[in-house]
Image (cartoon, rainbow, N blue to C red):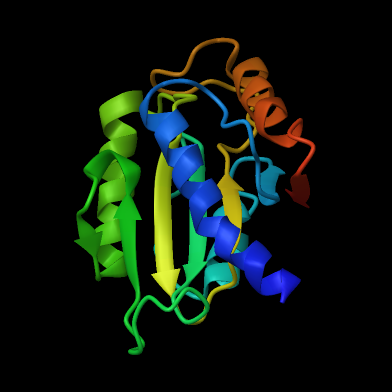
Length: 184
């Protein structure tokens, strides 16, 4: 009974986190455990996350592709009684109320939103993209995909790119509820 009560709190805490993020108030006073994937550029961090989700929805490329933190909240629709069918969908915090049923469209929106904040010439931004995936096949879990650590700036990247990405990573892994997944 206690575990069901705890599970029912997850969506409430996620909503609280959304409110803090949207209002620009920083971190919510309550944090759920989260997996934070860190590693070098093109090490396969995004692929690890896709294996956990069971879907291909993250952008790929030969240069730096993950240029903003992606905070991915997974919600099991069966556990939270959000429908009896097997539908899966995604929702972005910056597009409140809009549901994406195509994972290809989710990928395109991630790329579009990345370019909006980080430019289209390999720039980076510490402003996260918040995405929720609702599915009967996922665990209730928060995942964080970070830009890969690189030493040599390209395109519009600043000379201190390595320091900036490391600071971004430290911000997420210093949360005491973070589980660090190092990919190399």
